[in-house]
Image (tube, rainbow, N blue to C red; front, side, top):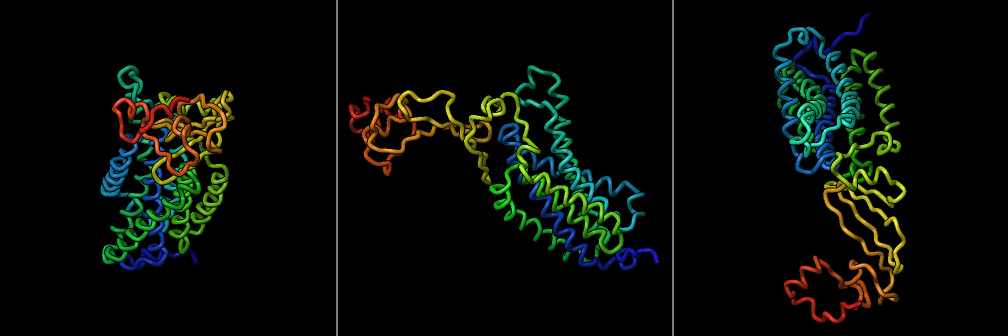
Amino acid sequence: MSPVDISRIRPGSPSKMIYLGIFLTAMSTLLLEFTLTRVLSVSLWYHFAFMIISVALLGFGISGVILFRSKSIGKIPTGKLLSILGTIYGFSIIACFILIGKVPFDPFSLMTDSMQFVYLPIYYLLITIPFLFAGLIISVILTRFKSDVSKLYFADLVGAGLACVAFVIVIPALGGSGGIVAAAAIGFLAAILFGYESNKAISLIALVFFFLSFIFLIDAENRLPIKVTANKIYGNYMELRPDLKIRTDWNTFSKVDVLMDEEKAQDGYDTYLAVIDAGNATTTIPNVKVLPLPNKSADASNMAFASKDSVGRVFIIGLPEAEKFSADSITERSQLQL
């Protein structure tokens, strides 16, 4: 007996797999969107990252037009169609992420390099593609099961809401590249469920991709590196001198790399440099471990520790500017002469 597509027999009654599938698709889509805001803050600049919201909406809009205009899509059984779309969606996340790293887009060179006007639409078009397939999946479900839209939409919203929680956990644990892979893996899992009842062959393909995605999770930052735009000096410097990098950490709003100086400090107090989002901002980290300072400091960043015998009450915000405007908190300038 040939497989039977339950959703075609009872189009008004979605199976549990459909509910789980739309839940996972919404979760994957929101996780992808959140992660891309962090990734684009590193690869480009933070203010370009927020374009991802418009790009995601563009992908959803295009999916609605395709579904409305295409007659062939309506002829494909629901389970088979959703499983195919889910597999393509998960694959497109990783594939498009790799491809955008190959596009030499530099937004600050638009006025000096005419080719940037070619790279710009290509770059954002590649980002749009996964959202197009995600939009198709959700649109197909909502249009084919109209009588259960409220329940399906509830599953969609719960999945999207849990994506917010997942983002807080995934990004610090896996980083930007790992978050991309996690979104793809969840997409493959949705594809497995969509075809589980009636299209096990497609589900098997999605299952293979699901397990393959875990390979990328192992050392994701090196397997799927984030390409940094050419005008981020520190970001490109770290690629040339990985030996200077002490550690890298991600959080929900930034990526922080800690670098050591190329040369050994003359005073014995090595100074580290914290680079935020590969160059959006930097700050110096004085490596002061013992107070009061046993040696004369040669670096201005250590000046605030010169008259201190503990680190408990050291707070520095632009010391030169504080002196310039005679800030009251600088009580004895003589103590700052090292």
